Structures are given as C-alpha cells and as structure tokens.
Image 1 (tube, one colour):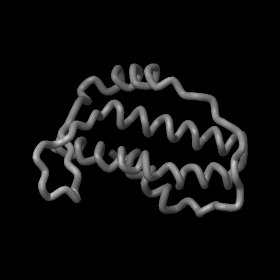
Image 2 (cartoon, helix red, strand yellow):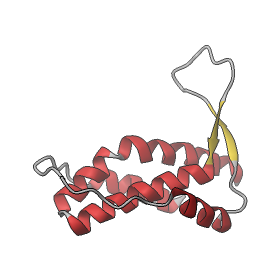
Image 3 (cartoon, helix red, strand yellow):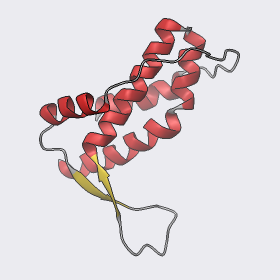
Image 4 (cartoon, one colour):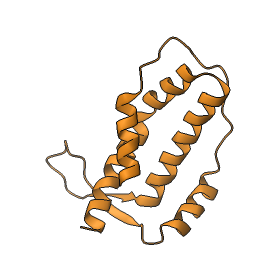
Length: 119
C-alpha cells in the first residue's frame, strides 16, 4: 500500500511537461512474464468486485484482477522509466502524468481491494 501511495504522491509532485514530444517508441513489455512474476510474488491476490461509482442503477458489479492491476502499473512505470533514460526528463514527466489516467485507476481500485483484504 505504501508504494502505491508513494506513486500517487510522486504524480502530484511531478511537474507538468508539455514542451517535448517523443518520436521514439519504447520496447514492448512482456505482459505474460510480468503477470507470472507478480502471481508468484503475490499468490493471495485475486479477483474482486468493482462498480462504476457514477452508475446508480448498477445491476451487476464488474470484476477486477489484482495481478492485472499490478502488471498494468508495472508496464506503465517501465515505459515512464524508458522515456526518462532514452528521451529526456521532461518526456518522462510528461508520460508519467499522461498515463496516470490508466495506472491511477488501477492503483485506486487495487488499493481499495487491499484495504479489504487485510483490514
């Protein structure tokens, strides 16, 4: 939980950088390999119910997957790090902030799951 919280804090402390555009492409991450490693590291993580907080007529919950959440967060952080190392600090900052819409949702849902997993 602490590491997830620290990523969220880092987002809020990262300057907005819109002056550079990246024309390089990061190497693809291997989702299956990352997922397998995370499954070994967190064997108790599994599926959990999720609901759209804006859908007041919810008929059935959706399903989240803690390992998928972590794998997606890892892949976004790998891309961010690659941009810092291979393009520029500004581009790394830009991607970190830009991709928040994706990894931030995963962190929020995963965090709620973890709060209920070990109260």
